[in-house]
Each structure stands twice: as C-alpha cells, then as structure tokens.
Length: 394
Image 1: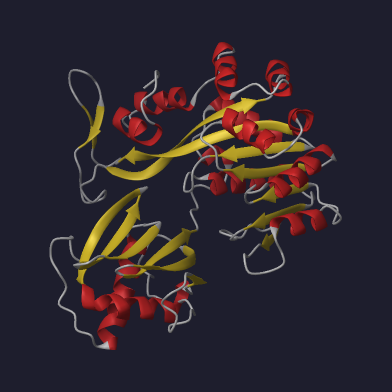
Image 2: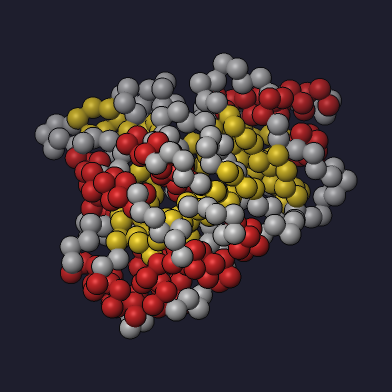
C-alpha cells in the first residue's frame, strides 16, 4: 500500500489484480477500517479507507485497473460480472483473505457496486467482532444514561428508540442492551430483525431482512407478535407501517428497541407523529429516546497535556498513523418521557417548542455530555464541533 502520493506499478495481468485486491483488503483490516471505497475518476482510480470515521485516500491507481479491480470484487462477492449498468450488492467471504496477523476479527464484509459516469464505484463495509464493546459498562456512557438504560432494559413493555446517522454506533448499543437482558433476565424470549445481521448474539433469535424477498420488516414483525416474544429488536423504523406495528407492540406487553434516522430526540418523536401515529400512542408507548454519536479518541500512546492551558493533544505516533487519534468514543443524550413532554406531544407541539421544553427542564444535551470527555483528555473540542457542530455548550 502506498502513502497516497506514490503509484503502484501493476500490469493488467489477472494475478496482479488478484494480489492487489487482496493486499488492499488485508491492509484495511489490519488498520481497522470500517469501509473501503474504490472510486473511479477521470484521471485516477482512488482507494480510500474510513478510519475512525474519517475517509482517507490511501492509494491512487491508474484508470486502466478500474474495470479489472471491480470485476475481481464482483467475483469475490458472487455478483454478475457482465452487468455494469445496475447497482449490485453482495457479501465477500472473509475467510478467503489472509488477515491472520490482524488484531481485528472480521465477522462479515458487504460489497455494494454502483455505476457512475467514470465507471463502477465499489464500497466494502467491514464488520468486526469488537470484544471491548459487548456490554453496557464498556460503552463509556455517562453514569446517568447507563443507569437509565439498565432500568429500561428491565421493563416488560415500551419502546426505546435510538437515533443518529449511519455509523454512529446504534447497533453496538442495541447489542449491548440485549446482552444485558440475556445476563440479567435469563430465559426471556428475544427476537431481532436486522438488515443485515451484523453480529451474532448467542441466545437471541436473529432474523435477516432482505430487500429482494417477501420478508419485509412489517411482514416479519406482524408475524413475530404471534410467536410469543418478550423482547423485540428492530433494526430500523423506516416507514409508517413499521412504525405503527412497533408502537402497537410496545403497547401490548412487549419491550421493543429500534433505531430511527433523526438528528435529535425531539425530532424522532415528531417524526412518529408525521408518520401518522396518534399522539396518545406515542406518549403511551415510547419510554425514551437515545441520541448518540461517535467521536475520535485521542491516541493513548502520544497524548500530552499542554502548558499553560492544560488542554490535551496528541502529537502523532506509529500507533495512530501520525493522526493523533486512535479509536472512537461514544457521546449521547437521553430523553425519557415525563408528564410535561407527553402533554406537549398530545398538543402536537412543534420542534422549537419541544427543544425549549427540554432546555427548561435541564436536559443534558449531547454537547454537554461531550465536555466530560474533553475534561478527561479523551477527545478535543475541535472533534466535538466537527461531529455535532457549533453549539452554546461547545
């Protein structure tokens, strides 16, 4: 792998391309990349890794390699090599690459290919078995949120929503809650509907939902309610039909957890109303909304405290590839529904009024939660602003 400035000397020979692709995948796994991008341009074929949430160009390949590399990826992902005009999705068996020396244990690799004006673009999503983020007390949540989630996990019914953009750790948090339930309440019937199943959890019945089948989220969820489940995990609430069934499940003796794309807890609650869910159903079913993000963590090997301001900074070392950051850490905010918030939702209050209500009752925002990490030297103020934007607290 080059540093992004040099270029490989590779021919069109198929053996060279196979070795190239294998090398790109192995080095990505060795560095713990979450995604690999193969991006065609008019002059180059770029290879990028997403490391700790940041997309970095790691190689610049000649354009003539583009088609052969994509074809090799299609073969690995069992896709149609002769179709270059339509999007395709597949899975690459992770045992066909030699990543034995990596400290990162791969559990799955997902391939997506998409046509562009410069050729086909491919992205590989890599899933790891992170042994350090399996349980709630390993996530680094604040004491308040950690305690509240344990209490919610012990309930017999209700809905817990997790919000945040893709790649913000929602699936990891849900997995940790499920493991807590398995440990604390053995014998409970737990079923998870996921698209895709990212990590196998022993003791949980996991069902994979695919776009190209009749087993959609609404169909599967409606049927599962007749399977006597006690705890349901739904990968994502994407539409009004799924939302209605999920809310009904939370009202009829099931503990349901799911995710929703929203920028804030208040926004998630209002989105349910916009989907046509009656306000009284939202206020009766929703227990809490957890909004979270992942922020880059200062490298533990090269972090120093500067003088005289006492700010923490990392100077860069081999461990962090001279970036000063290594790994990511969770920041979050939790909104539990109380009387005032429920009354506001029943009156169909708008977003600004809901946000003002939360501020007046002393809601701990995500920006405020992040300040504890700055004080402890775990991350920097610049990283907080980069992820959640400029706020009054930051």
